[in-house]
Image (cartoon, rainbow, N blue to C red; front, top):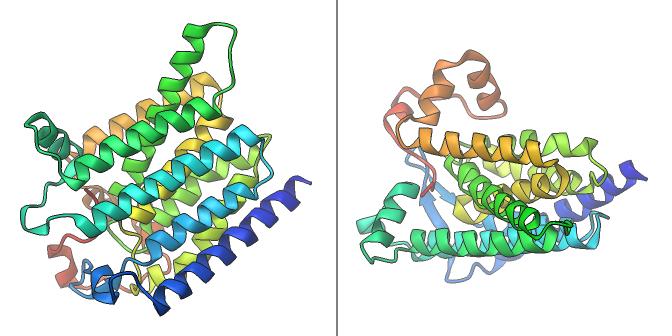
Amino acid sequence: MRAARVLAAGLVAAATTAVVRRALTAAPPGGPDRWTRTNHRDEPVSMLEGPAAAAGLVAGAAACGAAPRTRAALVIATGAAGAFGVVDDLAEDTATRTKGLRGHLGALARGELTTGGLKVLGIGATALVAAGVGTPRRRSAAGHAADVVVNGALIAGTANLVNLLDLRPGRALKASGALAAPVLAAREPGSTGALLGVVAASAPADLAERDMLGDGGANALGAFVGAQWACAASRPVRVAALAAVVGLTLASERVSFSAVIDRTPWLRRVDGLGRRPAEPAADAHVGGTAG
């Protein structure tokens, strides 16, 4: 039964991702140019992968066979993160681009609402809603409130962290799959099947550098993984996971994840699996859509 749920959710998620991607290719909202960006090689790539991946995750979550509250939390967190990410992808002012979580929070402190700032607020608020829906009631009201805060922060933080990894082809997909894998050992493993289905459907074009997730896809993947952990893990594990997410996010403000990966042999090998060989000139460019 567990394996059947994993397989069913994966098939639904993969099929939805593929169908939505084809539909968007046939009629991209606003035209194909609106969805085209330049990657780390200065080559054009499409961000239509993002909304397709988000749609696949939502469909897979609905079909994963988990408890209703878990499915609702996954759908709310993923759908909202994907939507706010797409808004940031399409409406961002690239001439005055504010980068990083610190940059967007700084702009908010000055009374400036960037599209990235709107995304931070929107994902933060909807992550708390998802946590409120997905967190079981405790006898202690204070304990329940603490769980909701931790879970909401974990969902929002993971959404941002996976987006920070979307700087090279396949990196965010691989990281999301690795982070979701432990949930296979939980009582409700079907959600990991959904995520792996989306990864399988999205990876070929992503690794071939025809598509990229953009904020819409990467934020959706991260929120999905965060909601998985929020609904499946014990409180100590969730607190430890949140601490790790916060630590990595703070480190990203000072250290380049790409540089760390390039200096670490086993990470470099995993990061390069399925990708086109690196070119010397590529090291001088900054790719992706994090921010």
